[in-house]
Structure formats: C-alpha cells, structure tokens
Picture 1 (spheres, rainbow, N blue to C red):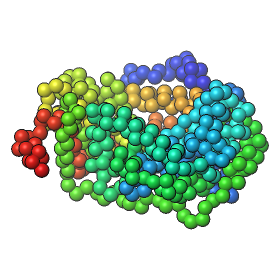
Picture 2: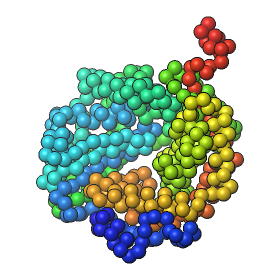
Picture 3: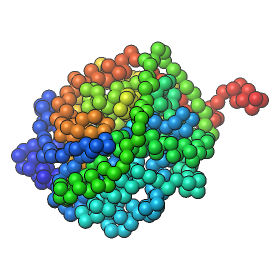
Picture 4: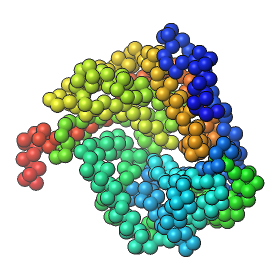
Length: 462
C-alpha cells in the first residue's frame, strides 16, 4: 500500500499522527504489509535475498559487503572508503563508465557508500537492464583492473574529499576527534575517511590484498527488489555470481574488545579554524543489535530531532548558551557511542555550557521523557519507515540492513513493532543504563586565541 493511501486510511479511521489528546494514551498500532522475501545461499557462500514487486517497471540491486572502515588495515585508515572508489575502475570486461552506461544513461542511478561495518553498492534500473547490471556486479566482485595509475588518481580524489569535508569545515576535525578520543582499543576510533598521511602511505599491493581478502562471495549479500521473474533472476544470479570463486581461508574479523572505562577523560584541542568553542561528551553504548537500541534511537529523536527537540529548546532557544546542540545514538555492529555535542553561542564559556548540559541530562535521567515527546518521535520514525517502503531501493536498503547489520532478515518486518512497543519508562531506563554514573569522555575544541599564554609560549619555543 502506498504511503499516501495508508495515511489516508489511518486518518479516515480516526488515527492521527499527532500526539494523542490523552498524554498517556497508547500510540496507535500501525503496520505495513510485510516484505515477502525469498532467500537462497549459493554454493560459494553468497547470500541472496529477493522481493518480487511489479508495481513499477524498475528493479533495485544492492550488494552488501561485510567490510567497513573498522576493517581498515593498521596504519591505513580510510582504506575501505578508498577501495569503494576503486570498485568503479573496471576490469578487462568492464570499462570505468560501465555502471553509468547501465544506469544513469538509461534513466537509472548508481552509487555506493562505506560505513563502519559495511560497504554497499546500489543501483536502480529499468527492469530490462537487470541482467546486465547483475553481470557487472559479479564482474567487479571477481576481478578489478588495478594499476598504479588509476590507484593514484582515485587516491587523489579521496584526499580532495578529505580536504573539502574535513579541513575546509571549521569543525570537521572536531567531529573526527570526538570519536577518536572515545575509544581506546576498538578500530571504530579510526576515521572512516582516513587521513592524508595514511592515504599517502597506502600502496597498490594493499589494494589488491584488500579485494582478495574481503570482496568475496561468502562475505557478500545480494539484494534484488522490484519487477523481475523469479526463475530468470535465479538463472542469472547462478550464472554470474555462481561463477565467482570463493577464496580459501577464513575472512579476518575484528576481535578487539573495547574495555569498560575506568575513569573520566578530558581532551582539549586548540584550532585556528574554530570561530566558537565546541564541546562533546561521549558515553559507550551497546550494539545496534541490542534490545536497548530502539529506545536509544527514539531518545536520539526526542533530544535532538529538529528545533522543537528537548536539547535545542533548552540550550539554544531558552538559555541561548549554544548555537547548536545535538544528541546522537551512533550504534554500530559491535558497539557504539552516545554523544552530546554543542557549538557555543558567542561569549559563552565551555564551563558554563557543561553545567547547563549536565543539568539537562540530569533532568532526563531523573524525570524521563513525556508521552507527548515519545509520540512525536515515534511518528517521525514511522513516517520515515513508511516513506522508505515507497521505493524499491528503500525496501532493498531495509532488507540489507536487517540481514547484514542486524544479522536477522526478519527485522525488516518486525522493526515497526519493536519501535511502537517502546515506552517512555523504557527510554528512561535505557538512558540511565548507559549514562547514569558512567565514565565519560569530554572534548573541548577551542579557538587558538583561548590557548593559555604560557602554553602557547612553550609550544612556540619547542
């Protein structure tokens, strides 16, 4: 059912997406038709999920590789992201513009992204182009044309991306540093975009080894959603992907465990680029697979989902101590972070900002969130989930995340129920579990002019 039709049906039945008149009333139970997916595992280990949907003459194809920035080789941060770029360079049978020719040139689209735990390649094409796009994806899984020329050119592209996204942004390094300083052992501490120095240190043999190690069928999940015939899809997948050989040996996995924090930690960084002070406070959080994840994700929305959110109203609008204030539940496959960030208003000090922030956090831990706040946050989440189901690509993304990140494809059909089952008391309990009395890391990112004179003089001499 289309979102607009579902919304009309709900409103016609007297169900509102606004907060209920009675503050403690249970939120309306809303469901969407389940994704009826098919699943098979090829002999070489490739997991294949498909959803047949003839509502539009298009099909979405996604390949999820279970490798992300946490798997970057030691001393090579940013490598998974760099390799994502290399996957578009072709091979003996693929030209560098093959994917554009098979997608954008005929009204489709293609792209890719690298996250902490996965790298995902995705296309949307007219149905009659499903065969060639499957062939092309299998081709680049099996072999790439890797040489010094295209490696160096693509490395330069990634370095320029770093300059624009991180160095040109006054607070770009602040966001990287807040994560880097929050972990001690887990490779989540390394920036997914890498660094100029470590990108420069990478060499072509590293690239070839990375492809051989991680870009293999038993480390990949193929998702196909849309207008196709199941028997044709099976034959094409078996023909193209079934021919990709599975390397011998196991896939290396991150085994590092982040130890519990034993003490609070304070980090102060001075930057000539920062116009106003910024602060961040982080706490260790659970895996995205945790039972607490839905409550923490709703807390994220309640605390920083737009200008009417709890932190924005208190710290930006009412107290005017910050220009920006946010809370993030950044949950990954292994573990995550709960992070509060603020960019201060002119004339405000980090000390008074921390006091104001601590006061707001204490209020939440003691009193919890209101039913109205929960209903509003839940409705925003629900709307996003329903809109996601409007497109084949959105359905494929939801199914891929369920199968790979959550480790359970059925999560694609149960996530709404889990979301709607969360209570205000459960959000309070979850926040207290990870914030109350827990050790924190505080980061102050300050303008160079705020550096103490003695410290600046000492650095100048050295």
